[in-house]
Length: 236
Image (tube, rainbow, N blue to C red; front, side, top):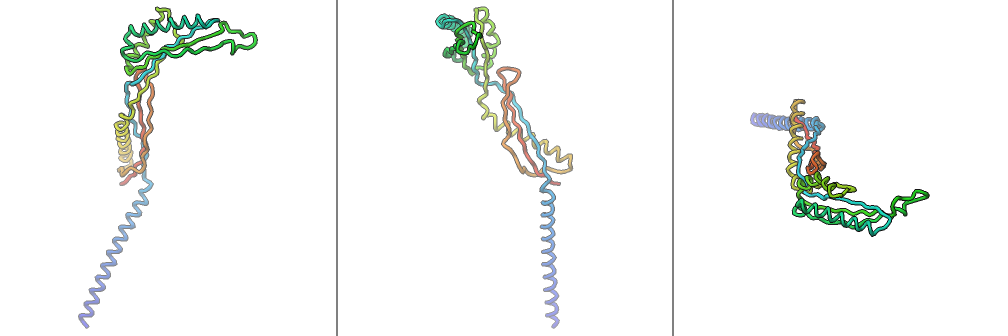
């Protein structure tokens, strides 16, 4: 009888311990769930910026001429002579050693076809032609464009004179700039968390980053810019 009573007492103690342990685990689970529920909307979304100024690596320089007359033959004669002057000038400057010089096709405008009523054009025809320079030495071509007023001394008046610069090596910069943008975003998030007496936890959302390539004040320079938007969760 005594042994039975002792056994029953131990069994009750064991059951009580199991129940207590179970209640403890349940409490911890509930606390974790409540904490997760409380913290799930505690987030901060920040933007990280990275910028870099680079040299454009491709340029096309266009020197365009136009001539007008009532007959096409004299127009073509004058244009061909002027194109030759431009080509000689470019070669004297060593442009042919830095890139490729080419001459575009003649484009003819029949001014009479666009005339109406008494609005008769001064000349029947206008013909245009362009000399193109394609090069990878963008700084050199920029310097040549700035000096091209020298053609006036050779009786060459250009209808238009412009260079278009491109940066094509963007993919080589992308990983480095993305890493810098993310690092800057993290710094901003940490500062925000510190101000709110929290700590950043893990990244909840992250975009690919918005890249842009824009012209700068220096013709052959390009501004490469990336903005990454990242959302971090916060914890105490």
